[in-house]
Length: 259
Image 1 (spheres, rainbow, N blue to C red):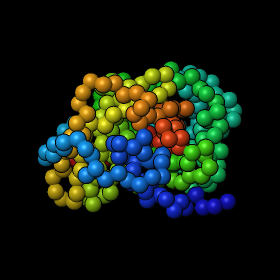
Image 2 (image 1 turned 135 degrees about the vertical axis):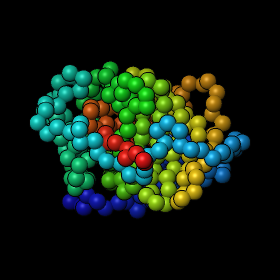
Image 3 (image 1 turned 60 degrees about the horizontal axis):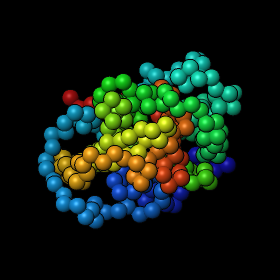
Image 4 (image 1 turned 180 degrees about the vertical axis):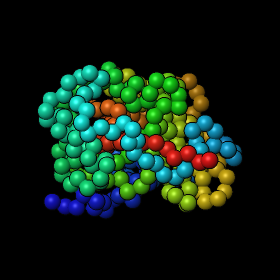
């Protein structure tokens, strides 16, 4: 078996496009990063003091308060088969250690995708019952049809706000800075489609900038926009497939807030 920490050769481009607004949920594809300067809409760039939940430092921690090694695994009182239960345990161990072999992670993702669990309680678990929602750290990304995958090497955090129907993607690079995209989403059955409305960028000690993407109209996100199809969500991990066919899983996390 190959090492569980070895990244494929296209990992740089894959990680770079994790937060691009004009890709089809991009970190699940291995295409090149569309440059921000290619956006055809007029850009509105303004300094920002990081309102709301934007004051996070450039690191995140697994939310140990939600971790339980002994509690029976269920999804909104939905009993799981033994095979699915074991696969969930594999992913939770992978999230904590990042040492589970890639082949085992891919096998677990395959089992969970095929289980077709009832998604009726997914959104509330993913985004909580009140704003600003819940944050999740990207752990592992897999190629289309689960033909390969790797642990994500950067600190990439997503926030889902079920009450406000808001989504935020961010990549955090320590003292170098961070890049986040924020927008609105629509949930239907097990699909979460979204439209990004703005980018926030911080470089080193400089004040962050906010760039409007000109997406403030009332159009609801749909299948022509980036979206996720969710296969599993509990209080600790979440599994979804992007529009382009790649699969990923996240672990519930806490932003470490600045004083």
